[in-house]
Length: 127
Image (cartoon, rainbow, N blue to C red; front, top):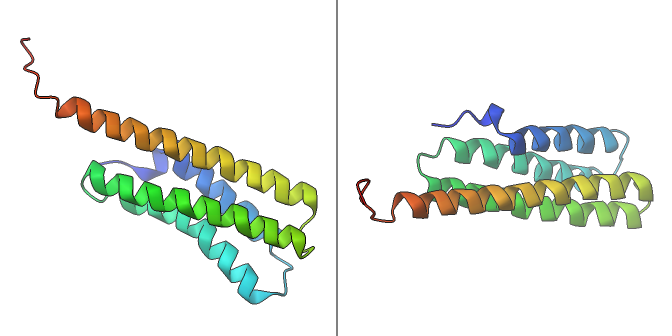
């Protein structure tokens, strides 16, 4: 069992959520605001759900969903910039954070896949 609060990817996702909510605090386009906030929350919550899903295979599925939500947030940040809801600087900063988080999720997924392979290699300890 994993304690998701100790996972760096979850901690970083939590910060991204806070930043997204702060950036949208004055946004009057409620549909847009709701969509980007839901996508950011999805990143954080899927990491948490996956950490307690019971198997690495399920955890990897949840992490892949989190990674996809990172892309959605990045896409929404471009839209927010194009619609002049956000400054170029704010949108770029948060896109970079989302890219870094997505990369960390990818590395974590690869680590879990490798650990799963190593645990099922069939080698005897005495070999």
